Length: 411
Image (cartoon, rainbow, N blue to C red; front, side):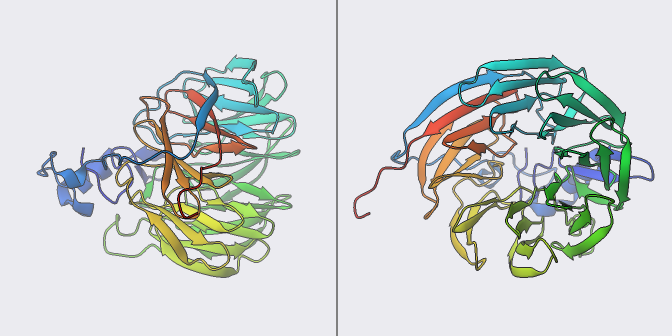
């Protein structure tokens, strides 16, 4: 398969019609024919520039122990699904595309409940105080009781849901594939408000998961904008462009915000595909800094840095207050790596071949590597305390307990 700067071209594009989103096989074929991004139907499959980077050898400095594993089964191969591990602190929840949802004790891995919804789950779970929510590729949102896994309600929202809904005490807020942001009543699933922001043309297959901050819902859209709305009624508060649609071809004009924003206090960190990484004020949307970067993944933040997975599969660390690039790790080129997570002094990403990579947060140097599955890792890792949770597309959840990196000579 030809690999290029365009993310996961075998399944990553969607084209809009008047009523529905269609999987853009047309788009992938057009890329192949025109050779955009260096690809061509006549390209040499043995070209080493098209192949995933060979994993480099290094001296491991991090003791990584497997705490426990679990599985809900499934096979999301070839699909851009928004299935992610989620937590309320005490429990961890995972779902499969075949409709299975399971809850485990976050520390011990002891099973709590397992439910088969028979839905084609494509986004979630999202977790609230007393319920969780998932979205489906057939345009449904379902809510389940957090204690028992009982399905409380299922409603049709009109278009596929490819990201985890945000769940509050009163609302379940979801982004749909047709450009809508919909708030449902958490008790019965009735529509509270609906904001529609339709985008014509090609977009990346995927949507941003909404983030709820106090009384605001903040989410990205397929036109490269990030917007905030009142949680109570959906009224607009602010909107900012993070990636501009420009150029002569549909591919040049791709400008999505598909990753979930990272929020720390009133600081919002976001990155767009063919756009910028930005620090914005959550109350006004005003930018503090911007850095030209292209990404379709979620960002991670610690006290010092912002970590971004670029569209070319390099990991970049930016100064949290300045946006200045402090280091870049490019040894994972074309390995289709995930967005990152931070655990102490370690940055963690997964890749298409089931490997988990641990990088030192101050330098980007590799400190450990583990393979958890023969399936791809698409969801960013999740961190709870000292534990790291990694979900593969075959439904396998692996939980690590990494020790701090050992000092090297001269440290």
